[in-house]
Image (cartoon, one colour):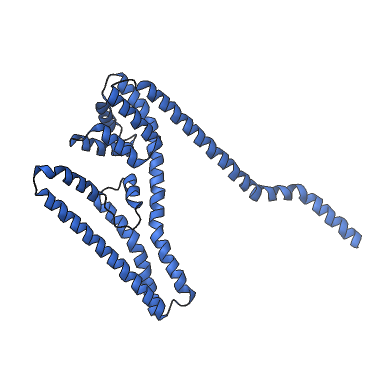
Length: 293
């Protein structure tokens, strides 16, 4: 069992070195940002770009994880560190338990191979759960956009501007649209910091990657640019979203009917067969008993 124990130790050492190198790279980037901050007002744009890059850091080897974390709303470094700890800590914990079992002779033979497979599963499981959480949040955002569109139409009809309308929805609709108001709050904070509303709305839509929100942001961009003519587009978007929801419900109903058919065949058909064919089989058995006698 020494080769298996040696390979496990090498794997643990490689993971530790990967974490240390990632930490050193982040430290060098922070030091670079601090040095750029001492160069004067001309470097403010570079500082902002570097801060945005550092705000989306991740130590995972999978480049898809930072975007998924952004779509989930985990943009703070603490929450990203929690995910990092789970993603790397879980397989390392499995590896440590495996090493202890190998050293004490509990894990032998094919059990070691199963343990290595379990390490891979422990590494992939957090991302799978992350993908499912992101899919659920996207569905919530899509449902909340269908609520926001009629509110936008009503507020635009009374003569409110785009920014005033979004701030009103953000302040008053947090109980009805919590996820969407959360994203709009982040975008409005950046607008308050001096960034353009149009660019922040587009960045929010591209980052979340929700079709309904992207269509709504496109109409808002048109309204910001042209200053009007968005009410008909919002009505058409609401109709399109209702059609999408109807199609989705029809697909769910069709899938549910297929599942219910399988359940009926598995549970109801045997009982129905016993009730209908049972008396005939009993009579046939009685007749055969009479012939045998």
